[in-house]
Image (cartoon, rainbow, N blue to C red; front, top):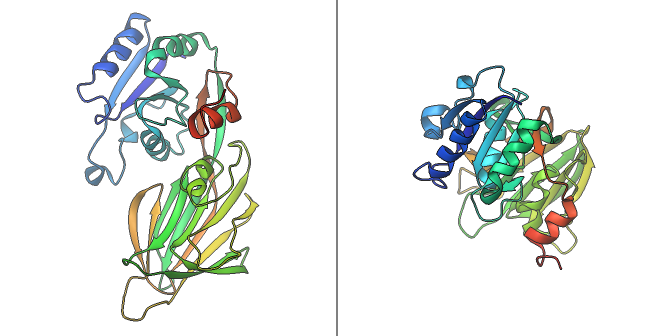
Length: 288
């Protein structure tokens, strides 16, 4: 690889100290590189990076930050087919391939082609209100529907391929990719799924019943969530968030259609550490 772009979370690398060292190292190795600093999401259509500023012949995006930065970059670059190498400047760094103290070794692997690619499934969600599309977006992790009021519950109906599966009353529901299975889904009691799987996970959040469990369906299935009326005194019944961004108010009878996206995220793999090793180390008890 010879042509790169660098995306940095300025909150994690305030003075661009690490970023500058990285760019300098790439320049010394005769690699082309452009630096894209994070923008105000409001001025960039709720995107962290202006993807239009990335040259079409870019071979890899190097993302410095935490898991949230990598997820945002994946959304911003969706459809461009540019692989992402994540460098962890955060805490958990589950999606990052390397830590900041191993940056140069990771870059050398990129330069010499000693790396692989791992494709991650994404979801496409569309929100319909009064029969009209109000929003659509792509996510790497999850689409979450939660209650909009304090100390109240919401009611949702879940359909798979237009067949009613169940109705949940509780704090909401998470529709997750395998990548997102280790996030909010896991915290809500959902299953951990290998990231190369092709499935969709539906997990209720604090359901008001004893027998509600996660539902796992094929990536070829379509999922529909309808917001049921639960309290007539409040206009907004729920809020939908796409990978933690874009809080969209939902009313009774609004519908969210979710299916596998045509786009995928490609993550650069340098290490030979297995998914389960990472799971034990970063989410479990630290391994042996």
